[in-house]
Image (cartoon, rainbow, N blue to C red):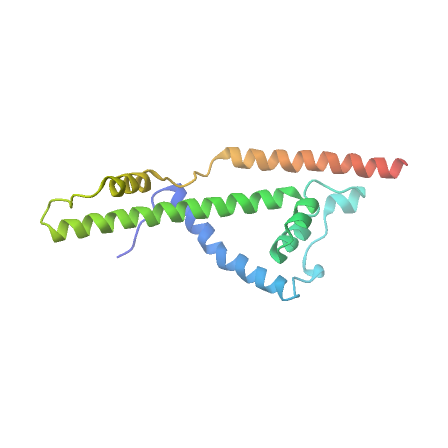
Length: 171
């Protein structure tokens, strides 16, 4: 039987899950000392034409540093990449926790229904509160505000880097 994927959040979550082994493979590749050869990557057209770094310059090096586990270098090269990694991880963890807790609650309700007819098992107060808490956990929603923040990070970082490069050239 083919399952239908209804919500946009579920499609985004499945896409993030699909990318997880890709990122893990790239991380292993970079940790082993290998990497993607520089000649395979296209040059930055803005930098080629103007000689100045664009707001996205350093993204490839920041991703490589992040995959090697060097968080500070990744942040220094381009803070937008670390921001994307944090949002990606939080999104995956929150949705996985939501699905896991929903599955546990369904399983417990099914088991208690099978063991005692249709009545639910009487539980202790702490068990009810734990199940209530788990039932209220919802996955982090993919909202446009995260994209807006990323855009602001790239623009502000690009302006600051441009000003620093201009200052160095003038002096």
